[in-house]
Length: 122
Image (cartoon, rainbow, N blue to C red; front, side, top):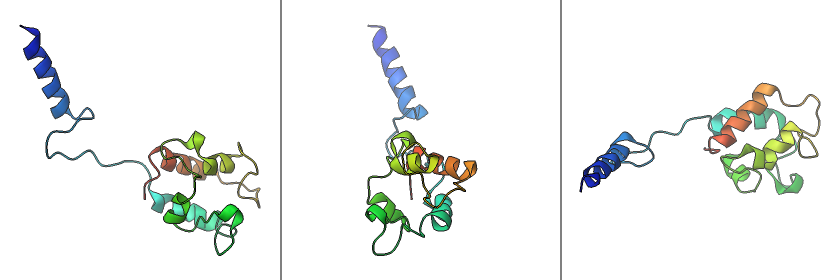
């Protein structure tokens, strides 16, 4: 049977090539994209005036990564399904920050979008 060696060669190439399958003992590539440390200054400057302390609106504290992840306001990998992102771009109401305008800059919203799209990692 001539196809068996071809299939084995293809499978071996996929495993060794890193096409989503990793050889025994091989680590996946490092995650890319911004981390929480990149977006935290935005939350510190524009959000925690309201979203911190003992009684933040809707119980949402944006002062630590753990507090953000404890609520269902971000869907890692899906900015367009993440309430936090939809509020800062004004798709969901009320738009945030509530004391805007000025709203977040395009660069700030793009960074938050990239953070969520890349998995909202710490």
